Amino acid sequence: MIEDELPISVSSVQWKCVESRIESKRLHYGRFAISPFQKGQANTVGIAIRRALLGEVGGTSITSAKFEGALHEYSTMTGIQESIHDILMNLKEIVLENNSYEVQKGFIQVIGPKKILAEDIQVCSSVKIIDPSQYIATITKSISFNIELKIEKDRGYRIKNTDFKENEFPIDAVFMPIRNANYSVHSFQKNKQLYEILFLEIWTNGSLTPEKAISEATRNLIDLVVPLIHIGNKLTGNTINGTSDLSATNFPSTSGTNDLNTIAQEIAFKNIFIDQLELPARAYNGLKKVNVHTVSDLLMYTETDLRNIRSLGKKSVEHILEALQKRFAIKLSGTKLFTT
Image 1 (cartoon, rainbow, N blue to C red):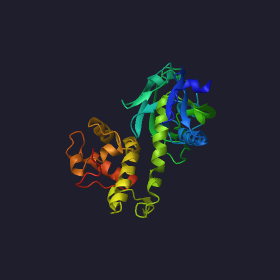
Image 2: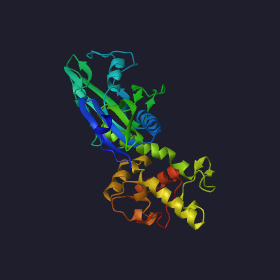
Image 3: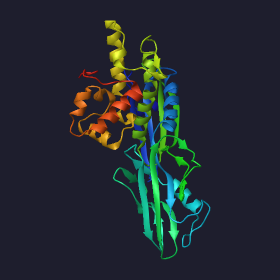
Image 4: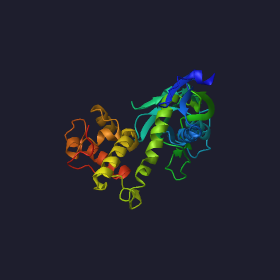
């Protein structure tokens, strides 16, 4: 029976991976059971998580390629089997993993005759090639062949920009690491009470596991609805220049209401990881070194505290302060906003 697949506790929602397999380097599959839900809740959660999986999970793609001696996208080059267009299409399919939101560069520098594969792409340490055997092109003569690549991390789909520099060709970038996502809802009875189980099926491109995909999708979903937590509060519901004012310093002065809002905000920020701030690699890694993983962790520091952290330079601190202000309208001062 369905309910036997997952230990049921009616006191809290639990999850379990009921099936997991790696079909290839570029296709990972996971099936998850989440339960128990009251009637109607499983469908609500299923719709939200599926949409977040397909639209809110970030990925990495090659967004442009610069060729030496190429005239236009549909031209051919002596000694190269494929046209420029065909090579661009092959580069579009390369699956990458990137730990940084900064624009990265990659290089292909080979001498033929040779079959060029993804493993021939030279990348920095923050970028990982998921399937080194992916085909790019074939050099049929004893010539040198050089390509400079632009690698970016983003979400969704980006149509190539028609404005580009000489010999540099943009690529329609697919940043979505989720190949497909489905969900189904099943009812069961426990202690004469009707409950629901939600089953999620996820296929990824191998740059992240289905488990990590659910985690990231859920975090991003929480990030989207955080401003709505304070919608009933006259002060924190205000906007300044079109930006929701979530600053802890702008909470109402009434003690009971202030305590409730602070608790709600702390809970929300504990579920928002610093990845959401889209910081440069140096600032991100500097925070990780001092075990700052969430926005809640970060708000336990004052501006002075941040400037005294050895792993953070002056510029990194400025990036962090700017990201907090831009993302959550939070300005760090001499007083900690949150305490342990």
